[in-house]
Image 1: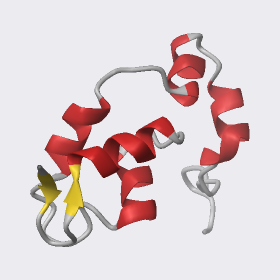
Image 2: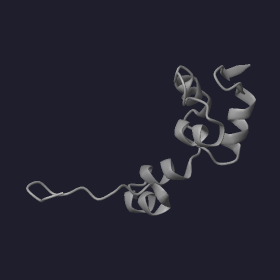
Image 3: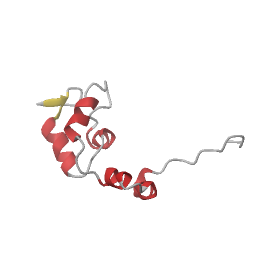
Image 4: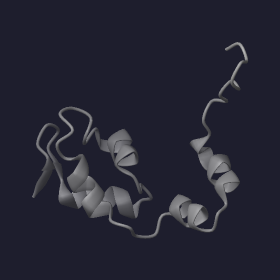
Length: 85
């Protein structure tokens, strides 16, 4: 069954990407474009991904935010209040 009509991505393809390590809709989008056009499939993708094993989720569950950042999800530093950007 199609999950993303815009790009013709099936539920099977989403599950294959998840099995290969994608654990967020954004990661699915980066490998398949699913969810990047109209966005109506994003909730369905979230449902397919569920709350299964995801290394980053496991690290967050352990309170290890630093390890999550080290795993490649680093954000650009924000200037402190009152500091020039």
